[in-house]
Image: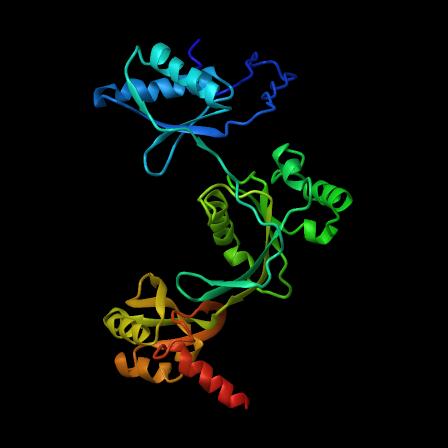
Length: 344
């Protein structure tokens, strides 16, 4: 009927005016597709029919799962050796017109987990070395991973309902149950990240990055690059190195703009708005300037523009400094030492 391109496993068809229709739920099976083989067509010219055959195979059998690895390999996963043999026979005979394929030896899927809570808090730095993340890992309570797999607990649940289930059935603190950041892998898997931090500011600034990293890590574990299962990652502390930033505004004629940009570049500042005042040769300029660099800024600006630019500064926000305070020769290290010396 022309719907095959939109339906993968199951779907519900209804009259467009029927508002009381309920979708047919997907079937759940007592077995899972845990045996996999890598397949490829023997002749390159059969590639198109091979790919199309995999799509049709995935639709025809509710148990089979066809995926493509990052390496480009096509993987067929089934419930067992016999099931895979039937799937491969259907692929060749029914969906590829008898074209030959090459298959690998069957591989069994595994899941990676932990048995005990971490013996120490692990610290990791962000790629730019500006942020530090402290985490611990522990196994989920008995039955919790199964509850997530069964859909009783998930990311789309109402936080209050989820908190009640976790507290009553698994002994979680209600406030802690409301601090679940995400599930994974694929946002629905039986692993989770929980915020255990206290008194950390701007935590939401890094939340999306932590969630993205967790989805990747939970899909490819450290032991065998298999999916993780039944692990709770607790974010214990976060250190964000911040720098006070002024927002400055000023006006100057067009011929002074070059001097303004030059001084701002020397002071690690940057312009975020430049607008000409209508009917005049003057420009209004708005820029961000680190407070630590603001000393002597007015004098240098007047010298660079022959007194034609007039700045006005107010505190705007905190921002990350672009170097590691623990490495020799970096700009932050003498600042940190100077601050420590001033307090001693």
